[in-house]
Length: 302
Image (cartoon, rainbow, N blue to C red; front, side, top):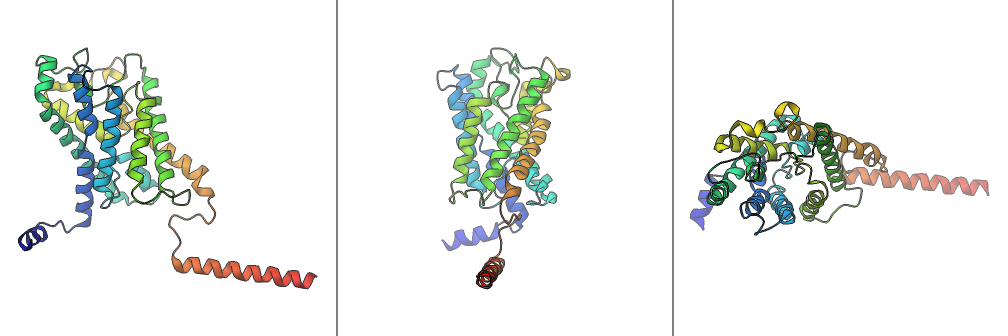
């Protein structure tokens, strides 16, 4: 035990920011959703279904949050990090490093799924790594639009989905609107992701997370799927990739501001932080003084 303790002290990350970035990286490295998708696609539906893919995504989010929440707050999404920055709850200087950590985590997570399912992917595709068609496997890792989806339909889909997702996340963060018991937040977020998957997934797979989409897309570009991962689409100049990269930021900001302006701004004694015990005592004393004045005035008027 003493040797292990000395070893841990020696390799302990001393920078708080570095610890936070490692937590964000590891939280997004857990890509059970891609693993579930690989299992369903390569088995041609004999080992799972659309629902199991959504369950894998939801459970992966839960466990990713459990890994990171005590260190970084488990943002695991650049859109969520940006929303907190806009609200003044997270420093802007950390946003690029958080986003890069999330991107790297998703990239390496995709690589792990590919390594794990390499034989299955090769057997399913006959050695041809395709983006479109009946034997396409790029969709295991990133989002691609359905055949029926138009450019504006895809854009609206992503803006609406991200707006609803961030609106709900802001509600979970709001301690003055029915605070959740400790430890329950990751589970509720997982349920939220599952709900969105079974209600908003058929258009393009509800990517929601730019890092989670771009990181694996970059991996597939390098691993053999080639430049088609950035080109295959019947509209948008032949490329879909920028829609799940840009639209979630627009929708996330819209959802965040909607909740803040319509709900949180109207709580009694609204503030960005909970009142300190001293401030709470001051408020109590002020209310008692006001009550005494009302009683005295009532006595004079009788």
